[in-house]
Length: 151
Image (cartoon, rainbow, N blue to C red; front, side):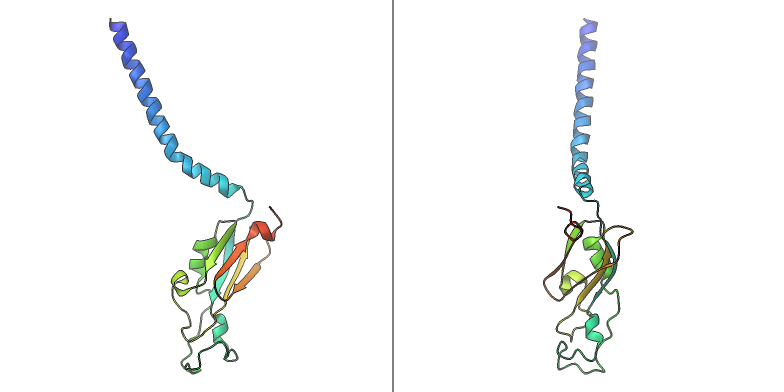
């Protein structure tokens, strides 16, 4: 009788250990899948520079600037003013889409300027040449796989 009780207790312990291992493996399956997707591309974007509205600094860009803003009141837009935000969207990914809006980029760097260029310089891998992308509205898309000829 003692042998059957011991066999029953050992069986219950084995089933419990199997259940615990199964639960932990299910929780870890999602990061593994993400890692596999990330490794499917050999390229990862590294944003080197990102500026929004530098074109508004030019006094010759009056067709893009508001008529109500005088040259004295025009704010000077600093370089790399959206580097942090753009890096969040793109760094470490093979492709990304950056929405061009003050909400997405952390505020309007030049409120009186009608058309602000989003200019980005990035690399697709560590020894890659510096690549450039520019857009005025909508989204700016970067796709290293497409640019480098991978399917």
